[in-house]
Length: 397
Figure (tube, rainbow, N blue to C red):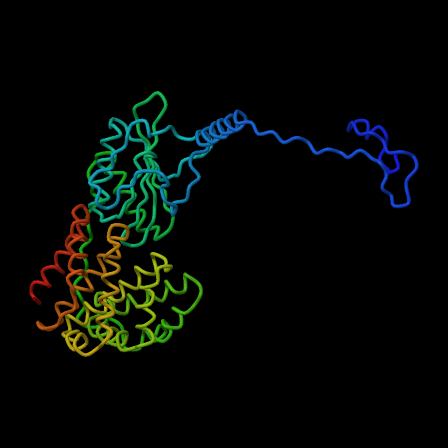
């Protein structure tokens, strides 16, 4: 043992000279210091490490597929939003099915069609059903959002030793019943078998009177809805918006009841402030923001038909600030087309109810609407809604 309590063989292994047997009073023995190891950087080693990491990632992707979330962006990929007419997929971007990542049950093997044909059919079906889509050309993947708020992805795979294509449709969130309808329509279109499931269901005409007795909806009052909107849980807020949407829809509760409820919503300052602030808040989720816009549209449409919106537009000061909020929503038409459609429909109701000498939109706002019309060339609801607003503007002017 050395004077420092370190075994001799350990000091010899570290190539360090042992200390003398006698220590001084200040314990400053003449002990050789242990030099730290020399740190060397090797550029070749860094390159080899990167090559190994890339090879490992490619191996994982081949065996297990992609691990990205449906809500993440396609980092580095070329995106095509609602303005894209066709999903263009290079053949080399369609990869085989991962070996250790089983496909969803909502997948289908398509025979006798090329990648371009399948992609074209899917693009046409998504456009007919007014589904906002982001296409990734380099990954053969599309991320979709329907008008009901159903979010799902479409992924194309190749088949070894075959020209067949596998179409996988994976639901991420939203109504499962609505998703099933979209899934069946997409698969039928991918197979080229027609679009029997791709037919819009005609809405029932408005009811002249409420089919249920007065007071049957007392369990869901407007005050209860306001309290639920202040809740911190997403599901509670969304339930409140669904309830308000039903109470202000004449096809659900009848014209009389819908008019009464709509008047109560626009006259309830705390509730109306909550709804408008939710539209303005950038952190609000897509489902909640879309639900708020739907409630506002139901109220304005119902009151316009009942000839009550005219007085509200002329007398209430919140209309001007509401118009500004709606224009801000329309500015994001390329990324949130469904929200833009509802905002444009609200604007149309306001313009039709406004008097001829009322100026609600500035020139810059009109340019925003024209831009939305250009974006909607391949998204029929957006094109139609923006065109209606432009016509209403010409009538007011």
